[in-house]
Image 1 (cartoon, rainbow, N blue to C red):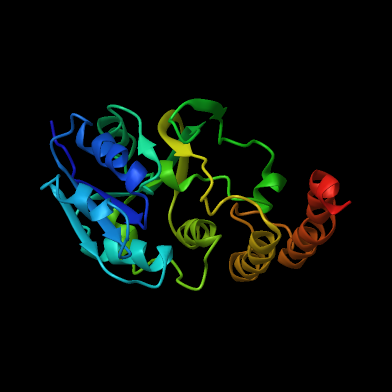
Image 2: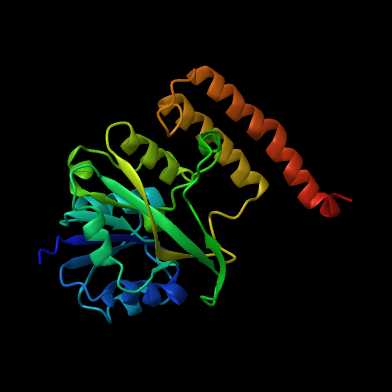
Length: 262
């Protein structure tokens, strides 16, 4: 059997409490042809000490410009036929790499994503997330592709597509929208990974992250329109998106936090 090489890129910064589980989730895939590249931003905790325990891991630990910059560094070092992006506080489920290589074996698919699980800081599953959404208009309003289950062919990197370093919250959504302009992204009804919710998640909504998410979301929509290739008017989509973010989401945020405002 042919085993295309799979490169896993992991950005890291002060996540020593989780990094070993991420490393082991790659190492224990029972897949013979892979590389794991960890780009650490100069962690001050025990991350480097853990990295030194695993000689198969290719890693650097140095100051960078943030998560997007770290991922791009990893992409530039990757030598695989298939690329995955795993944040070190997340981890893969067992024995998924062979299935992923099979899903990407045909000419009609350039990238895939799957369902996944939310887990807490201890790794206990708290929710099963089904990512295949059948209502196209909903795809305008949030990133429905989880980066931790996203795998793509090397030709996308060869095309020069990288993470835009100017994005800090929605860099994954911009990346997927960029890929979707030319390449074929496919949902597969499988589970590849666990996404961990904990106190230092960038994904946790605060007033500041909502502002950044709004600004970056508008920028993405101006660049690409919707993720899906609808024949509707882009300006109409833009106005709908602005309405959702400027009216409905702030109302939801106020209702959620009203007790704190008294």
